[in-house]
Each structure stands twice: as C-alpha cells, then as structure tokens.
Length: 162
Ligand code: NI
Image (cartoon, rainbow, N blue to C red; front, side, top):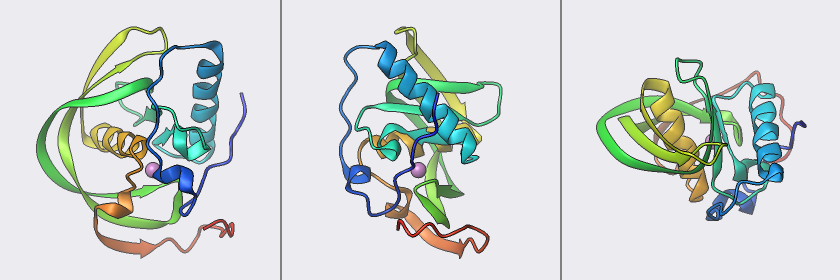
C-alpha cells in the first residue's frame, strides 16, 4: 500500500468524466487499498479515484458508521429522498468549507471488490459522502453547488498546489 498524492483544485483530472471499470484486477484492488490509505492519512471521509489522478469509477468511503469502510466500483445512485443543507469540504480543496444541498437519503448500487452487486441505503454523513464522491466521477466538485462558503480554514498548511 502507498499514500498517493491528492490532486488539488485546478488540476484538470478533477474535471474529467471517469471511465467505467470493466474488470476487477489485482492492480485495481491495489489502487483501492492505496485510496483507503490516502484517505485515512488525510483524515477524510471519502476519496474518489480522480483525486489521485486516475479517471476510473472507483470510490472509497468511511463515515465511521455501521456500514464501515466501503470500496465501491462503478457506483450509481438509484434512489434519492429528501433534501438537507449540510456543511462539507473536500480533500482537493484543503482550505475551503461550504454549505451544500444534498439528498438526505440515497440508495447506491455498485460492485464490491469481490465483483458482486451491492446495494447500500445510506443517510446522514454516509449519504452525503457517497453523493460527493460519485459527483467526483463526473467531474463535479462541491464548490459547483455550494450555496455559500463558510470559512477558509486557517490551520491548514498551504502546499502551493492550488
Ligand atoms: Ni471531494
């Protein structure tokens, strides 16, 4: 496993449309493990493959709830219910926090790492994180639908990549 570099705002890979995964290979599983390690190192709730420069439909999410760590291949939202205004950030925008409108509850279909179809019904932080990460696969960033920006985090080290 390895920690990968998280692509920051302005990197064109964040605006690309990711390709569907056709086959779950050992390389793909290794990439998912790297994404988990990168997410945990950055203390994030989720990470999408484009954020480590790979335009494939892969996300990892861990909302520290009963669903545990999720590694999802080709995730799609198949049902949405309710709307909430929530506060969120993104590892690709380390100094930005904003208010965003999200679906309260979503049902997501995806393949698991064993190639079997999964269906996850999520609410709360997990629902928010799944929507955020799946948006990344279509080049959509939280700043695109932020209602307003709340604060610039002052404690983050600037890495000069934005
Ligand atoms: Ni993000």
